[in-house]
Length: 358
Image (cartoon, rainbow, N blue to C red; front, side, top):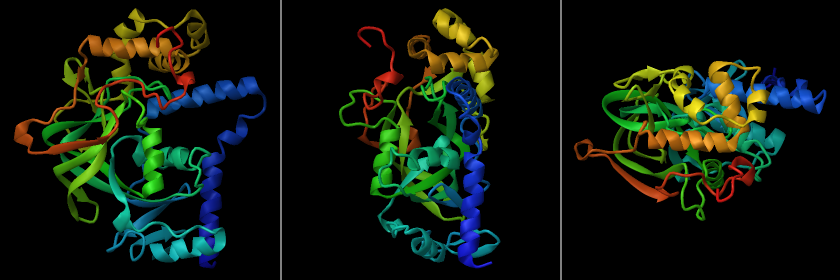
């Protein structure tokens, strides 16, 4: 089979796998809505979603596994396309010829951003970049597996509208080491990532502060080391379970904090869910689920209950806010986003509580 055939076959196969679930939910609007809600609850329970086994080149929703990173991630690095191992530049040239893929911006001009939550997953990148919300219509992103020393990936101390779960946060933890991924984003991809994370110049408060970490220790999968990178820091801080910061159990790490599953983190918040119940209509809607899944359903379906529950986490001091002790010698410089925790104005009103004054 020619290279063109191999690449096309890879794209067709992966595309079928990615869209197979969506093709089965169009029979009628009621069934589709139920299926969509069930799928969204499942997303929340599996956060931060399934990841590739190693570094990959994301091209229009398709992950091409890196075999070697080379000197340049978009030229002499090698990737696997079907059964062949070829240079990244060869792959991109072939896609430029067969699919009119424009020439991507060079790695030297891209921004290295630490992905520690869902942004490391192909499925999340696909939702962000292969949709009408990314007007350019195409994306080429090197995603490199790495290890970050003296930090841990933790459950962030708030509930998100998209799937009702706790998102991921980053916390300083001397002596720890955690898996992260470096996404190399060009200017337009950076703008789209900002928008997807609620970074907006007009928002006086936001989920994240975006900035640069200096004096850190990152080791890429090829052994190369970095001492600085860009990152989104959660303004709500990290969730505490049983009075201790809670690391994401699904993220491979040498933890100092207790490793806690999403289900356990939600179950530990059951008293808050009971003190701030969802509306009667939402409770009825979500009654087909039990336990943690039911709480995710409520968080997805009732913005006011979800916001009350997040507020309760803060009031009950069940969060550990972002802090870099002087002894760490690590520096974070905020470049965008607010440093005040809150729901970004960048997001639509449909994601907000409908009560007056909110």
